Image (tube, rainbow, N blue to C red; front, side):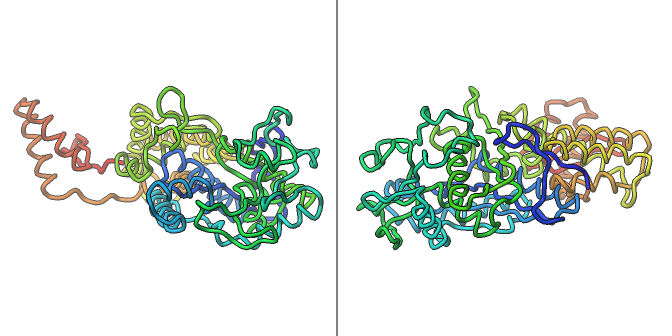
Length: 449
């Protein structure tokens, strides 16, 4: 197995991946709060950690990926009231939509997808432990984490404790012993239509404690990788880490791994609150699943990535290039003297999961394959498989007969130098989801995306 290093937000450096148990690893990736359809930005961690699991398994590490679904949250109550529906019904509807939308990515499901509503007993038990050990206190039916009780608080975000703002606004301000403290349990309010029993009265969990409890329930503590978007570093992941460290006296995870944001204009992250979102289902429909996966893989996971026609066009061109290469390859083993390029691909992934560097070696391999002519596709299939793009080497579906007729008429128009008609026919074909490629044997239709 290669030595694998990943950037750890806690240490600010590349950390070797060390395993609790030989040959096994666990990843917990923070999933969505289900109050609306997810957007392309929400999909980035889903893709990053799904592909990381594939890479680790390629390296012989049996990997469990848990990706939670937050179905108890302030945002759900607000959205449900605005729509005049029950919060539980909205959460269930949006959970189903999230699963359907992410299924369009064709990367399979996480091994575990815990729901907050199914984890309340574990959440309550964890809060009880924190209260017992002096790290939390009850006030007016709420329970708050006592931040200053944990000297290590701030180890994830590296912020000055006195300058922190939990983002809870005025809620609970009159109950907190310290403005820095944050809610573990919230007493039921008249405008909230769900609640659960607890030693402190009926209510519901705070956001941060949900993930600490769900991660421990399914993966234990001191597991290998905790992941999520960089917007979660503070307060969410800081508070997750603090809760578990205070209650269990060990770190929740060995490596805290964060992906950058998707930006849509003026370097602003894509988010529902800003109103600058592109829905995942719409994006897949517009550019195709393969182009979208290539788009995510073409940028380093830690860096922000622009969502634009230009960048998507570059991803589509890469997809087309690999598809074209696949048509010239045969099934079977690749020449052994091309193995160093394949090995460099996986070495790049082992060094902070550098997918753009890895792709450069895959393109280098394709260049050499094109120079040699028909060879076995084994190396390329192995590389693309880790990126969820092995399907690019499969023979695609045949274009419908009516589109082939349009392609024939376009070819005739070009031969007659009627380029206006030829362009119109090309646009008709493209609108139907196919692209015309002109080759020595005549026009060929290739599905877009």
